[in-house]
Length: 254
Image 1 (cartoon, rainbow, N blue to C red):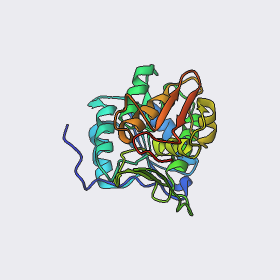
Image 2 (image 1 turned 90 degrees about the horizontal axis):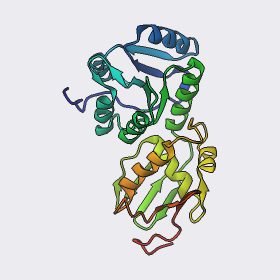
Image 3 (image 1 turned 180 degrees about the horizontal axis):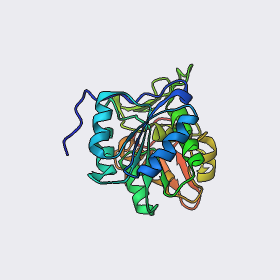
């Protein structure tokens, strides 16, 4: 499997999500026909690929606002393409929804750890897929007047640029993970339960008893903490949720 070159399409979201270009990569022709027709009726521009190779070529030749990617494909695993997309600056933030046939927790967790923004187990209702795609596009769309920068010592969270920087270097976070970090950082010192976090993440389709929040927090820690196993910024409150440290030990600043 050859790596994606740097000339591949960008992953910015369209301002009007109802005219957004979507790419659906799945080898189930019956499903793609049904879902593709449904999304087109809803106003989306949908392209379909039945293999990783075809999907990769389509990503090379044109830009898409979101990707719906099956986990298991005839010529490989959707996780391989996820790795490639997240390794390239131009597609690092491409909204990505992973489809899993079995819906097993480890499949979902691995997909989220590699950079998928959301997942949906098969079989699913087309209306649920539509709701999740809408949520992905809303989260990725730039907000008009967000010049605020949250500063916590060496960590900066730039709301306008939608990026976090540690020592001036951009942290590699998906759009989903950035929004989760902002929710925590806007309430430093306050313990937030998983339900409170989900309520604050407008439009994020995450189940209350799912491990997706924990997986995303782990990914956030991996890029903003010196030691992800001994975090100083995003702390776990056992049995309750998470808290963003008001005073961060490594910085010595409030």
